[in-house]
Amino acid sequence: MGLNITQKIIKSHLVSGEMVPGKEIGIKIDQTLTQDATGTMAYLQFRAMDIPTVKTQLSVSYVDHNTLQSDFKNADDHRFLQTVASKHGIYFSKPGNGICHQVHLERFGKPAKTLLGSDSHTPTGGGIGMLAIGAGGLDVAVAMAGQPFYLPMPKIVRVELKNSLKPWVSAKDVILHLLSLISVKGGVNKIMEYGGEGVTTLSVPERATITNMGAELGATTSIFPSDNNTKKFLEAQGRLKDFTPLTSDSDATYDEVIVINLAELEPLAACPHSPDNIMPIKDLDLTVNQVVIGSCTNSSYTDMKRISEILKGKKVHPEVSLAIAPGSRQVLEMLARDGSLANLISAGARILESACGPCIGMGQAPNSGGITLRTFNRNFEGRSGTKDASVYLVSPETAAASALSSKITDPRTLGAYIPVNMPEKYLLDDSMILAPSNQPEKVTVVLGPNIKPVPIGEPLKSQMELPISIKVGDNITTDHIMPAGAKVLPFRSNIPAISEFVFSAIDPGFSNRSKELGQSIIIGGQNYGQGSSREHAALAPMYLGVRVVIAKSFARIHKANLVNFGILPLEFKDPADFDFLEQNDTLLLDNLLTDLRGGTVNVTNRRTGRNIELTVDLSPRQLDVIEKGGLLAFTKAKA
Ligand code: MIC
Ligand code: SF4
View 1 (cartoon, helix red, strand yellow):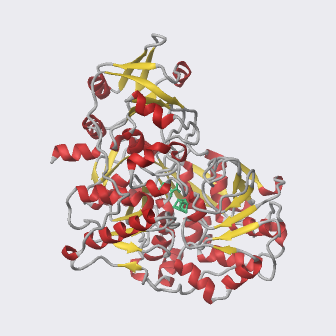
View 2: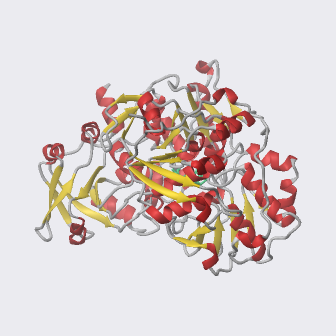
View 3: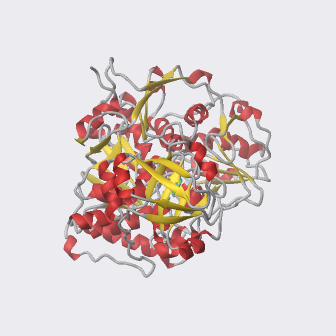
């Protein structure tokens, strides 16, 4: 029987398990990437394993999230990351060189390889035909140590693209449409594999926009074939030798099929406060205060070039603030050299550093009650830095058109389409990517005072009586659990300090309350922990004494992070039982260690006497890890 692309890559990397959906598999990881906000913890964990040099084919450490440097903390993290990279065989992409996913696509991604990244948008690499997966920092550290990456074998969904996009409709609209079809939880434990004649009409950067935002479907990853467009892209990046063709066999089978007719799509927006709250632009009537173009979703050279053509000779509306962050130094320098940057500046754009910036709330927070259009991938409440702002996620074309008019504007009203060709040759200069030292023994790793040791979890007990410290609803994001932004991000390498901010946006008393309770349980709804891969959303609650999370369902990465830090994730057998639990109730868990292995756990609510059945959807390996108190404790115990 023929294989699809995903099966081909998994098969050639399979270390353990069978390719049966839902069963745990272990795969070999060829490449890893980290970014600074998750990287400091990942490298502290890697160093705790005492392995001198990474065992991957390639590992890259990027600095793109925390580039504000409002005091010593971020700069100290950067210095730590640079010295760790140099010592342990890791390439280091300096701050200013660009957003990890954009730079990795340009300079390192290879079709048919596996990539594990400590960032949820690592699937951007699927645009070039990689199996690129986001994970917690500890999983990435373990992969750098040469160990397999474990995950439940996903279902494989074929997304069949028919025809081609109409003028002014863009790759962003394809993924927004898919989000409208299957929602932010529609992709959990699935891989979206693109195929069909429409694929050949999309360039690698366009494909990467689609696979990038596949993260918002909750998908394990998304992937495109590696074809002639991939070859041309790699050739233009001076990397023809990295090309391998990769397509699915003609008799390949899939677990599900979704058909999208590209020709029927129109410009769309994801409305507040969820990436799946989709409306056609033409049906929205809004006055816009701010427009921001950039992020790992839409900051390629061709995206930027097109908006510069739209803005050329025109002026941004006086009531609008337009900020633009090109995705990489390559993009920025090419725009500077071909005159596009001058068009943007002349139009009145505020040019930002090539970094994540406003996407993670590092500057450019909107005004009170502001309406902001962003080409990003997440519009969770408060993520922009302004709690009552309304963030709409749109294509670069819609963003540029709206910046001119101050009204949300369908780019199809701009007149004749402005085609932008893919460059024959990208500008190549890797001088901001530092190779690791060839004398690693001479490199000293420098830790700043804000970099604190990683806390280690406690072994699980068979009997526990735990109070509920918080009860939350559906689709709680890791931004709710562990917020980011300019105030909190500098504490990513200091768990005691960052734990003060757990749930701070929805329940400012949470941190103190849980410390007082000693140990506790969190109750969640559907898709608990969607969004970012930040393991701090598990690590900081663990530090605050959270031992168990009971939810209707979990997002994949967060569930894996909970296990890695010794927090037990359990699911309601009957979701209706959610209604019978309240904050401050005390739950009795009995005979836990035995029952966990049987797949069902019973808890009794002390207040009501009611018994609730919970499902254990964890592999035997994961149960071993949790029993020991997390992956670090487990690895230490094994050693
Ligand atoms: C995000 O987009 O939320 C982030 C910031 O890139 C995160 C990583 C992090 O929290 O450091 C992600 O997507 O994984
Ligand atoms: Fe950076 Fe935003 Fe992309 Fe996350 S989603 S990696 S914060 S640009």
